[in-house]
Structures are given as structure tokens and as C-alpha cells.
Amino acid sequence: MRNLPNAGPGAAEPTIELQRRVMIAATVGTVIEWYDFFMYISVASAISVNFFSGDNPVWANVFALLTFGTGYLVRPFGALVFGRIGDMIGRKQTFLTTILMMGFATVAVGLVPSYASIGLWAPSILILLRMIQGLALGGEYGGAATYIAEHAPQGRRGWLTSWLQTSAPIGFVLSMLSVYLMRASMTPEAFNDWGWRILFISSVLPLAISVWIRLKLQESPLFLKMKNEGTLSKSPISDTLRAWPNLKRVLIAMFAMVVPQSVLLVGAQIYSLVFLTGTAKVDPQIASLLVGAALMLTLPVMIFFGWLSDRYGTKIFILAACVIGTFTYLPLYKALTFYANPALYTAQAVVPVTVAADASECSFQFNPVGTAKFTTGCDIAKNALIRFGAPYSTRSEAKGAVATVFVGARAIPVATAGHAPDVAAFTGKLKLALEEAGYPNRADPGAMNFGMIILVLAALSTVAGMIFGPLASAMTDLFPPQVRYTSVSFSYHVGNGYFGGLLPAIAAAFQIASGDIYAGLYYLMVVSAISFFLGLFWLRSGPAAAKVPSVATAAA
Image (cartoon, helix red, strand yellow):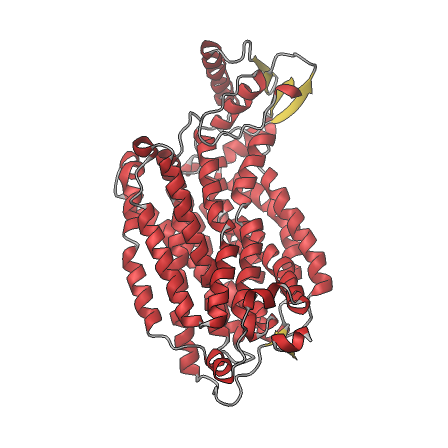
């Protein structure tokens, strides 16, 4: 990787105490912003009940996850908007603005009426607020990473910025813990009705703390030096995306650093929670505690790899994580199923479920608002299996063949598709057959191996932490200071938004379409493998060594 330019005359190197204060202040504020952002997925089930109609709760949950992904998709636009402001006006004022936006949108989510009250306006307003959250977060990370890095000397940058990297996992854990405590204090009906709203509205308190902290910060000394010298970029977006030397750095950061980090981290921390609650049928409160415990165990790992990157660089850790992730995530998720719901794991292996039907009758059942009707035998069979959480394979039959579900050797035909009495009779027979075959409705807490579940989850997070820990240092080292805020923000949020952010929804849709509970992981594995080869040829070896030129020099 390449060095940040030294501040030079007129910008004295900050003291160790100031470096520590800057790191703590920036990290605490970012933790609160991530807490607000992740609160949504922590209450996704309640959101789906209140804002998305339809008879099938599985598809309501998929659409709720897609709305979560919307927050990711707009983050690159926020990166450009606030990155430009941060490179032209200043780092401090910009990420003070972003946290105010995030706080407003989060509180507003808790005040939006439900679908039952205002119809389609409810999900529309919700999506708008998620977009505001995404825009705000798009300007947050790059600003905080740049701010810390520009206060950190070479040799300590990986260490100091790795603390910032813990902000997302800590925010995620805090959101899950808050949800757990709120759920434990009331009935499930009360939580789904109004309890979840308290979590969003009460976020105004940490917002006030974060604003107070950031008001006490001073501007980056390197930014002030460039401002005094008149060397600030007049067009950071153009300098980032139109000057080939810097655009090349953006592509390297995006596809060789951020993309593998994104899919591995989301796969380890967010999708694991979705998988445990949705597929493995673990109680949401138990799943939240397990994922939270694993994340807290692996926070030191991220800091450790940040510290190591100051000595050995980041390439070796990025490549190792890509290889390990490609080959271990699938067996680790199978182990997760085994330890979390051994009855489901055993039933799947001993009594496979197959849908045999005319392939032309099998639709991709994307039905977010419950208006589409799927009346063919194949669709009815798959829809029922989705409801019961039973994995299945599909076998193509002759044109016009009657759709039949095989639970082991037991055949359950869908005699006449689309008629309620027949559907009800089929569903009852299927449920009985699955129960007799050993497919559980819920995971049995008494049969869970909690210690091994935490170890498996910690192993997933450790792999992701190999990249995530030193990521901020690697990215800030890569770009010249005149466009650092814009370049870091854009690279980070495109890679995260368009690859990792949609992983839960992509995985859920693939799972439903194929019947394979692990289908979503193949996307993660392919992305990790491609990123390995890109990093092998694009990334520099060893610790940061070469000076990064200014935009003007780089474009000359």
C-alpha cells in the first residue's frame, strides 16, 4: 500500500494523546450511526408485519430484507455527495451533518403509521427513510476513516483505524441487545404492535451524545494545511472518477479490498442471524445472543489484524481470507445447522424432500405485497414447503404432470391447484408428513450446542476480520488527500452496497427458488474466489512504502 502524504510544515504531527482522543471520538460516533442503521434488520420481522401485506410471511420478510438493502444501494450516492463536501469544506463538519441525518431518519421510522393505517404510503415512506439513512451512512465511514488516518502517523495507522472497524460490529451487537431486552420485557404481540417503535424513537438519546462528542472535535490538520496552501481539489468527484490513476485506485480498493470484505462480513454477521432465525428455526432472542456473543469475542481479532498490517501490509491477509472464506463458509454453515437444529440436519439427510412437477408450472415466487396469486400445483407445493422451512429439491416431470411432494418415499400430490379446499387438504397432509419424518417446527433449545454455535460464528467472523480490521488503513493509504474522503467513501459503499448489502435478500430468494438452504452461500464463495485473483495481481505486498502523489501530479 502507499503512504499518506506527511502533513509537513504548518501541520505538526498530533500527540499520542490527541491521536487517542480522535480515535475514540470518531469511533463512538460511528458506533451510534451503525446502531441506528442496523436497528432495522434487528426488527425485520416486526417491520414485515407492520409494513408489508400478504398471506405468506416468508415473502414479507424477503421484501423487508430488500428494504434493508435499499439503505445499502443509496450509500454510494451519499458517498459522492458528502465525500465532495468533505474534500472541499472539511472532514469534521461533514460527518457531523451525516449523523444528524441518520438520527432524524431513525426516529422517524418509529413514527411511521402501519400499512393497515395508510396503505402503500407506509412502505413507501419507510423506503424513503431507509434511503436517507443510506445517504447519511454513505458519508460517515469515509469521513471517520479519513479523519483518524490523517491524525495517525505511519506505523500506527492500521492500529488506530482498526478501532473504527469495530464500530459496525459493536453497533450491530448493541442493536440486537436492545431488541432482546425489549422483547424480553413484553409479549411478542406487543413488541410487533408498538414495542419495536420505542427502539427507533429512543435513539434520539445516543444521537445527542454523538453530536456533543463531534462538536468537540477539531478539523484534520492535513486538511487545514491543504486549505491554507490552496491545494484542495475543486472537483473531487471528477478527480476521483475521471482521472485514470485515481480511478484505477478506486477499482483496486473496490474489487480487491471492499467486495471480499463485504460478502465475508455480511455472511458472518448479518446473514448468519437471518439463517439461524429463518432457516434453522432458532428463537430470535436466542439467535441474537449467540451472534452477539460471537461478535464480541472476535472484536480483538479485528484490532489484532489492524496491528499486524502496520508490520506486514494487508495483501497477505486479504488473500488468505478470500481463500479460507471460499472453502470454509459452506461447511461452517452446515455445522451451524447441525449444532443449532440437529433434528432438521438429521431429517434433511435421512428423509429428503422432493417436488416433482412440470417445470413450466414452477414460478419464481417473488410476491412482496401479497397481490400475486400462485395457483399451479408446483407453486402451491413450494409455497407450503417454504412456510414449513423444509429444504427440498425439484425434479422435472412431463408436461401436464400432477405436482407431487415426496417426503422420503411418501407421495403427497396436489390434485387440483388453486382451489382453497384442495390447498388446505394438501397443506395438512404435508405438515403431518413432515412432522412424522422428523422435520421440526422450531429448533429445540435443549438440543442446541450453544458453545459450538458461538465457536462456529466466531470462526466466520475471524475470517472476515482478517480483511475488515486493516481495511480503513489500507484504503486511506491508497488515495491522495485531496480526494481521500470521496474516494474512500465511494469505493467502500459501492463494494458494500452492491455486493454485501443485498446478500441476505439474494440468499433468501435463491433459497426459496431452489429449496437448498445453503444456496445463498454459493454467491459469497464465487465473489470471494474472484476477489482472490484480483488481489493477487493488483495489491502491493508488504507495509505501506511509496508516497501517494497529489491529484495534479497523478493526472499529469
